[in-house]
Image (cartoon, rainbow, N blue to C red):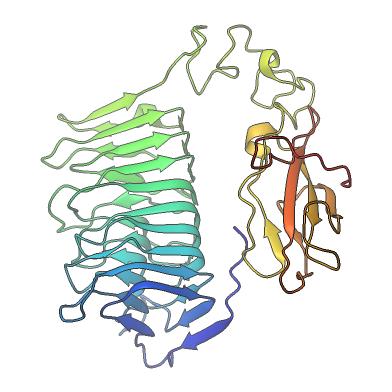
Length: 417
């Protein structure tokens, strides 16, 4: 997503090193546009901050569990824990969401402590300059998270600190990280840890502190359409069987994986077209034939719609996931991964100004041939009216569609470009 645009700030006196927001029972609430700021965690400080910045608990006597709390467009800056769920109480703190937000400058960025802090989601979140990005805090265990569309930079120690948990999985989709170490279980932790599932994620430890993933017991590591480059994986050392598996993933040092006597590593690769070349090495996985790639874009000539153009390899798909992270910037999901790096975008807007609302009114072409995945629009609709936005992708192979109407028919828009 785009940058976080918080509208108000709640700050603690930095010298006080205290918490900004604590809840002992909170449900069905929405918090938007708030920066929660307290002292940054400094390991060189003789008395670094020990209080959480924001913590949601579920303490007895408050009548309901802490659940279904949504934080939108927020910033959690500083604290022992920038934001935590179930840190004090082993009761339900589940189904909470953090969206389009920033988590930074804490000892633990995002922390869960209760076995019942389950089914929580962070989406479009930037993790920045934390000692440990996320996981279980000191002497805590339990809880599960899904992180969708996240980025991690500036982590000092490691991305994940997982001790043990009750059930479930830690799931990461479209997560990027350049941290030197992804995960190792801290000394003194007991019990089997959760599986980790990286889906369409890019892990590039710089420089790597091998083993960058040290899975000593329980659970397992799964990589789907993901990259780990460079870095070594280690399995073993604990008493529980665990595993590592990769499917359609690029792990450059997979052959160097360290495996204990009761642990296993699996390459779950497939050869759909039967040409003897397995994914992800097959540059044309659905058509058997030559691996020639004239333009060097990673897609073989026999299934590349523009074999001499390295910026395009497939017809552009429908552009999805249009959203406003702030009041004046429209973002959408890139089509470059599916169509090529040369993909550009046309953006069309209609309705909501001086004419009656409806399809085709007030047509405006906000941009044509854009290389970015966002555009600025400071206009606001008149009261009682709406603005509708459409984006299509274009590359050397073809021009994509504007999507379909609710009855399934393709939209026809001629006013842009």
